[in-house]
Image 1 (cartoon, rainbow, N blue to C red):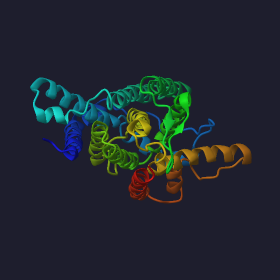
Image 2: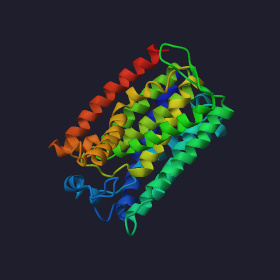
Image 3: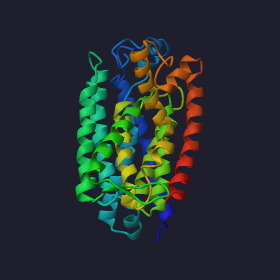
Image 4: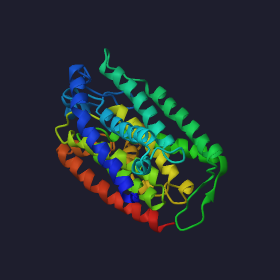
Length: 353
């Protein structure tokens, strides 16, 4: 008999070890095929050159390959499918208990993770290819929107999710509005993927967030979902091992799109579906993601209506760099804050039910 705690820790450990094992091969191919931007420089959302960003990061964008997110989602996929396959072949009680691939809890988040990974991979391929232009932003948003609509309809029609948990109160019945709510949260999470901008920054932040939801799912007795989140944390830790400044590779879209889309599913699965609270704690657990998106929106608003910037650079973490903070200092402080917000969010989720 394997305890629920081991059912979570074992997949996390296996995912970490797989990530460590496959990284040398991934690194070899990324460097062999020179999967980095051929021309440095970015443009703001309004189309103008991001002069301050380009001043700070001109050389960084072309010094390391993209697609490091492969390490994360490949570790999770190999762990999940590998344990499931071994359990089916060997049919031992221990492996059957460790098998966390289940229709009720992990099929949707795993499928979403892989779909996001594939679309992000295509975008990365176009960015590192001739011309250096990825998928147009409207197309990427359309993909996220379409996938979110399908999953939102699945939650509403198939899983009968029609309400959201309210802190210290009864769930709020919203019926079909659960679909646009899921779409909105998914788009917001996808927008927060721009936090992948400094060596090691996004990996540490996402690691804290998924660890939080592993705890929340565990306390709801959604052991398979908790194990999935833990496997993601294991893959992220392996990624971080090689991404401590200076980074060996960047997570890029194949990582951020996979993680943000899967996170949206996890958030909803730990809400009323899990008889708990998953949506309300998200702004706390993901406070740094909120700050990232909010800083971008505020910057655009300020430039449009006042004709000047509010931040030296948006999103916020680049503003701190422009102020003179070294990238590693921004990363370390974001890691500290992400752990603090993660603990606060978990405590809130467990106490506000």
